[in-house]
Image: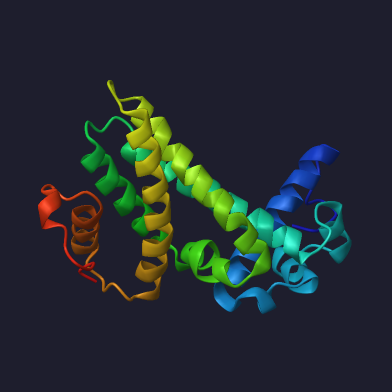
Length: 208
């Protein structure tokens, strides 16, 4: 398809939106494969087969583009967690389902884990969004908790905060390979630590 016919039949707004999506997809791929240094105006435009002038109709610089790519992945993660936990009858079941969904989401496509967790600590643009991500995770947990009758609001708030922090740290370790490859074992161990069946049996240190 030639560049001239690529946007035939689309309104200007549709063309801009489609080009924006192409640039975000390119940034996600390049960042996931080569890190921040791989994402330049020229590289994302080349990867998207777009003229560089189209970059600036949606983004002021690559920092803004990286932020947009991060936001897209976070939105998918939050939706994945919400679906995994929705309708489950207990806090323990929701915790296990949420952890499993987050770790699977991050490792199924390593680029996701890299942009969400690994690089979010060192890249200023992504680090700024890290706290916002944890807030979204907390809200996702609270939404599912509120669907359960007789839910304790204070306990829900505390649990959601702990859950959000644990997910971020755990996912980073999981993606890096520090926790091994047995997803079931990691999920079970995490649930035992965060929500022990018998509080008197809380381990002195996490099993990993």
